Length: 234
Image (cartoon, rainbow, N blue to C red; front, side):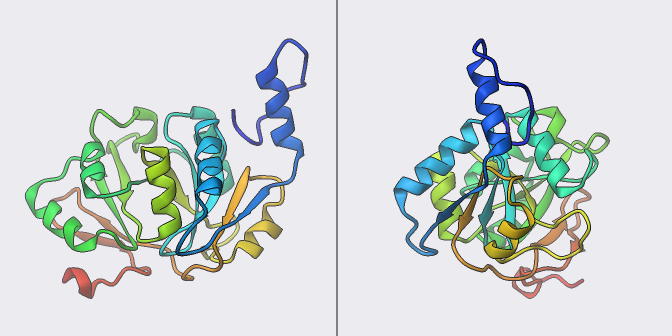
């Protein structure tokens, strides 16, 4: 089930009715404590992801769009909301480094850098493993973004969900700036999202993006994550 999908509700299709409701109700807003998020709300948000919703949630950089990695319709909606095609790297947001290693091929030099950077506001471009559906990989490079955020809300959500969240930085299609304030998100997307996990404002910049596929780290975008922490320069 994906918020934003459309079909005419009938008595023969319960799922169709639910999809129609998703289309026509306002985005839900969950007010979460930024350091000790309420378990009840986290459970609700995790179930929404399992049911095919696209949500906005806070990270240690800006807010992000997120959906279930196995739901093709949710992924399509996420790309539409972000304004990107299949050549744009989406990101698997993981709970820890060991989970990240399940979805990406990581050699020893890459592992040492990842260990320095996680958890933190960094996204790494890496080659995906067979655990990643092909439709989520870059069509020519078989790569994707991966990261481990340092924020209590998303960490609680990841542990409740029990698997990574497929994500993209919440940058509107007509902008270059990542959204960091849930009030702005609610005003811009009053019906597009199933829910906003509102834990207050986040840092204004997106993650720092580093491509690890060539064997030598290449800085693609300088964001919140410090390059000095990793011994790199732009």
